[in-house]
Amino acid sequence: MDFPATLLHGARATGLWESLLEAAAGMLCEAPGRATVPWQARACGQCAGCHLVQAGTHPDLRVVVPPALATELGLGADEAGEGAQGQGETRTAAAGREIGIEQVRGLIDWAQGTSHRGGPKVAVVHPLDAMAAPAANALLKVLEEPPASLCFLTGTHHLDRVLPTLRSRCSLRAWARPDARAALAELERRGQSDAQAVMHWSRRAVFEPDPARGLEWTRRLVRQLADGRVSQLDGVTPAQAIESLQKLTLDLMRVRSGLKPSYLADMDAALRRMAGQGDTGAWLQWWQRLAQAARTPDFPVHAGLAVQAWVVELQQLCTSGAN
Image (cartoon, rainbow, N blue to C red):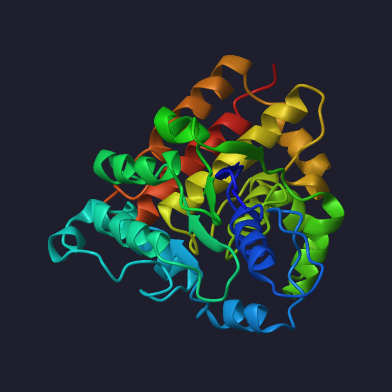
């Protein structure tokens, strides 16, 4: 049976990676009467094929990700398709963030072989935009003429960065954020306290390692700004502070427009008091400065002073006078 390559695209931390793995497990499940179409097939979790997938040792499953991402996802070198990576390739900084040519060559060699268990072979390649031209060109050849019974499942968080030649060979499938019920269920499964607030703060991107990152720091900052006395700004890196300040600023700009806050839904009253100050032009300029700082968040020599400077600027904006 021929399977068209599928490109799943959506936002980070919304379960896209987990969906790729679930689809692969469903394709490799050996339960009688199972479906054989990606995202329709469901793994039983009990058969020999499912046990091999769970152990990360299924011979008909190949996962290819950048080395740096493999570490983040907890994949071993063999699991992540890094075994064929050349020595020169591993020495470059880009190699850690990109899928290298040797990884793709190893994938192609594996794809040309016959199925070990008599079913489909499944290749999971993620993210598809993390490929330099040589690796993309090598992958393109196998996408154009895939071996029989080979299923390609690929993903990306940046569809616009995927090379058009690769994108044109794939069937596109959009991945939506989990709904509120699913997001709360995932947070509760993780034992996350104050799941409702974390769901809003993360905008339902609950599959990242710490979806509550920066929430308590921002809450403390809002309370201190409301009291007119800011202190205890430690506990965040410059990158985390900028991300939190961007979320806070977006909420402040929303309430200035008569809308409800998105990230700090439980602090509506305090945000409305803060947002009533300053003119719209000043708020827009502040947002632009945050966006500029976000491009190089770890550049400041003294992290504490950088965070303090940004907070002082926000405090001045919030107390600069009514419209």
